[in-house]
Length: 103
Image 1 (tube, rainbow, N blue to C red):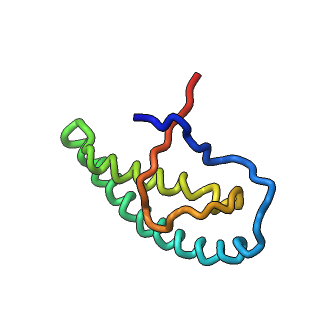
Image 2 (cartoon, rainbow, N blue to C red):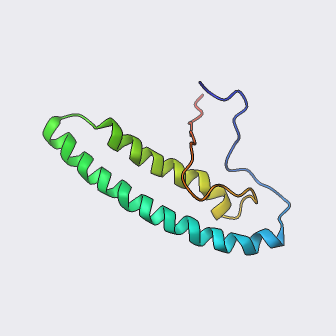
């Protein structure tokens, strides 16, 4: 089921708060630590997935879902990390769905 009013992640916001810029430094560190651990685990899953495909000729759903979760985590935090918005995302992974608009 898709959201009838999806929020575009990468949008320009003119106004910015200076205090948020200082808080962002702490968020960068926290998100960086979580992203590093999550990325390491995702890499291990992809390494196992490679052998799974090589041996069985099909993908593991759970390994694929974990890697997708890491990518969704990173994409959801990019606007904040790249100073595009002041809306703070959660530090820990949360349920996010990313879609490609075609047409």
